[in-house]
Amino acid sequence: MDDVFKALADAGRRRLLDSLNSRNGQSLRELCTELDMTRQSVSKHLALLEAANLVTTVRRGREKLHYLNAAPINAIAERWISQYDRERVRALADLKTALERTPVSDNAFVYTTYIRTTPDRLWQALTDPAFTSRYWGVTFDSDWTAGAAMTWAEGGRKTVDPAQVVLESEPGRRLSYTWHTFTPEWAEGAGVSDEVGARLAGERRSKVTFDIEPLGEMVKLTVVHDDFEPESTLREMIGDGWPALLSSLKTLLETGESLPDPAQDHADAGSSAR
Image (cartoon, rainbow, N blue to C red; front, top):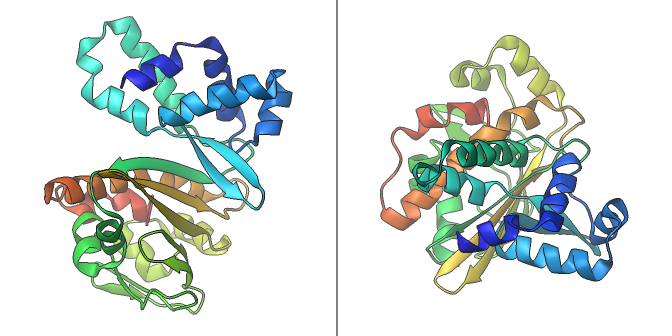
């Protein structure tokens, strides 16, 4: 936590967070231009923010894009909140809200967490039905090779579609696949209204990517859910679902215990991150 508080103590770094809050997914060049700061200064600030896990980066071609990451703020709110007076609590709550707000112009969802496990174990947790059923309430049927079909199953219902496919597969390093198909049967099981279900079914298919990076005894997991339409209904819904789901994944891998009833706890993922 020391790195987080140190990173937040500098006004320049807070300006960078404000800039990313208003327009997420910016390159170094864009941040320098918007804030009228030198490239060297912005680079140093970003390095500290990234070290504190307040900013995470994603490569798109030759560019490196920067995104806010809410995980450290969630940790402060959950683990340290009782040690601060009311005004500090309010400030932390305001910052947490800002970090989790839907981006204005780049609506990709990006979230980074650190898990005490191994890359192989994390890969298994992302693909093995014995794991996914425990923290997600969902199972997948796929051979997990690029181009392979995926069948999603939850609550006794299976979703099959030719466009549900694995996009990239590097065991222990990177996994990417298209999101599932929003069928009337799925909507009924997930408790999604006919109106919302129809909006979801009318949107183009999104995709999710898991990047796995070993860091000593920890593994850095970055999740990018993107390819949404502007003002996407699904994008609005996943903001709560993914953090809850990844928290359950982390708990399972680090303690061996699942959070209670994943199907119920992550009902928003059908309505959120499913």
